[in-house]
Amino acid sequence: MSKKIAMIFSGQGSQATGMGLDFYQNSEIAKKMFLDASARVGVSFTDLLFEDNDKLAQTEYTQPAILLVQMIAYKLFKEACSDIKAEFFLGHSLGEFSALCATGAIDFADAIELVHKRGLFMKQACEDIDAGMMAIVGLDDASVEKVCAEAQSDGKKVWPANYNQDGQLVVAGMKSDLVSLEQTFKDAGAKRALLLNMSVASHCELLSPAQAPLEELMNHMLQDSFEAPILSNVTTAPYATKDEALVLLKDQLIKPVKYKQTIESIANDVDIVIEFGHGNVLKGLNKRIAKDLVTLNVSDMASLAKVLEEVCA
Image (tube, rainbow, N blue to C red; front, top):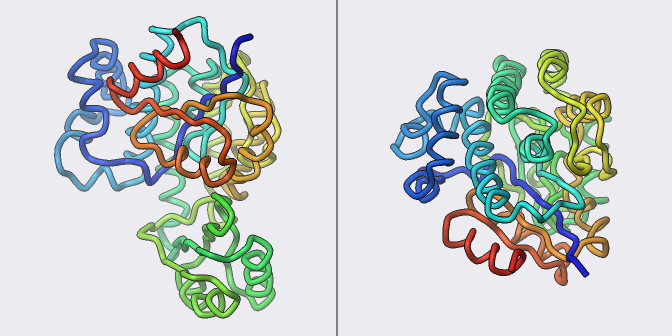
């Protein structure tokens, strides 16, 4: 009996200088994908990823850089093991766009341009406001939600943004409002309320100006060609049409990422999860969300060989 596999992709925060170098040095496919991405966005991805620079931290470059490395990892896996089919694709925030590309709903070069411009739209939405995000550690979801709801009733702009695991929920909003609530979260039982080094408030209503331009661009680029369903960050439910993607990915900008809930929903339906791209942040989250769910990761040539041996032998 064949194993049921989900393919997953992480979001922003997983980037690092040097990511993708092993792929680039050892794969002609990777080199071509670097060239194609560079030509599409008009920036050298070898310089961006392999040399110290300020651009990698800027969301309009962070997003395509992460997607590039993830899609190289996925492409190399599929080239070596084409018989393996996913039951589901899913991603954390930005990673849902890599999932779109992996399932065939968008061309690779189009996906690179799409997430580059998504980053620009998000940046522009937050340019004239002091936006930010804060990680709340050690507090249950309901308590975080209550603090946010009470703060909103007092006129503050704060929202739950990323449900990562039990005891770890990221909130987004106006930075001054987040800072003003630090002690409130701690008084409610949080071990930490840590302001993140971000100038964009992802997955909250502050990004509503980015919705229309993103939807228009997606409408030109997406296709009704899904190899397998994608699990939505917004609803946790599967979707497999362009029309659904247009609505859900537009909504994803202003609604929280329900990653924890998504993994919980599939933990008994799949045998193995494979994370593609630099690092293994989702593998770590999965271990804490559903400890019996096997998660593998493809982040370089050595880990690719290990995963191929385990799932394609």
